[in-house]
Image 1 (tube, rainbow, N blue to C red):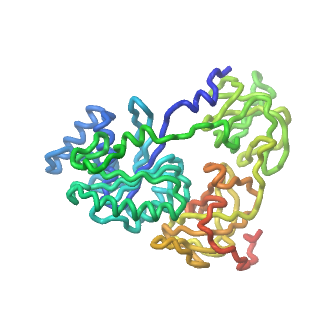
Image 2: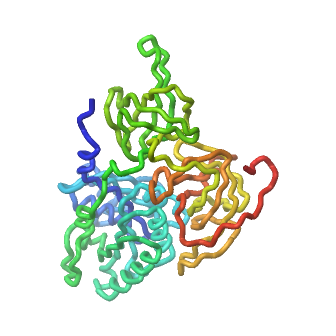
Image 3: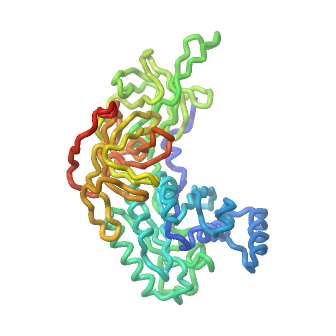
Length: 444
């Protein structure tokens, strides 16, 4: 039986964080500097970067090449895909998502920040807060990223002047606070030179706060898995039908949140049937307890009808099932999302038909005002939607669970991801209005 407890796992210091910012603000250079100066780069990696930089006629190694791994990224000098990096210091382990800055790749920022506990948003000190900065701040707020770092980069190009930093920090903090971001830490840096990235800068003696790495190492991160709402989306029903295991029936999946124990009374949604956990298999061995993000197989006392897409939850902590979802979404596809749009909604391991019943509002990034009933959302728009599903979904609010309170909308014709949504999240949009639907078999 397993001897490690969730409480012991909670003591592990792991920080998931993402970088974001507008084009050419220096995200990849910051990440490269962070890896290089914290001695998290292997010798052969550094040699490869030095050779590539020399081939481009650069005297010093271009540290951005440590994260820009695609050939198109290196040729264009931009980040296109989300680059994940794993590194550690003596104080903490890190999983980093370096996300693109171009507007058309905002969808990748949503992906990278969706599991982050901290987001570093870069701003070019020469340009200040721009539209893409505001968009990334809004996405961080919607995704409920608890910690936001404003890294005012390229301070060497503005003479390391404190008033420049102070003006940008004040503007961004006021904007982020208006979005509901709980905490903003502003740090003046030069990623190219290394000022305030890992080591304190001798050029900005007016700044007395932490470096980027010092803040990453010390920011409080909660891993108290025992307080989460326990959720297991069923991915597969295991029936070996072998002579050795003639009666084996297990329900496999990755625990999305919380903790399950042998003896727990559980409910299966959306059917509402209840039973008891009689066993938990983890990596082929029985354990007494399992927690997120472990992949396990649950054995139950009763043979009830359970299939892929069902959700196993504690009997005393079950979310309500509904066919009507209200959510805030970030539209990521080139094709607009319109009222009456027929889509598939993917929630956990369950995929069902749905209709966009209304789009009550779209967020205007400049002043955080709400444009009422726009009728459509175009690429990178953030707005409020109401959705009617063909079958009931057991959805938590996003505030309660980032995993089971989120969903994506998918084009039923070609499988393209259209929209990322957060159940119950709101920018205080107006009440939704029922615009009616067409009678074509997609109305529920």
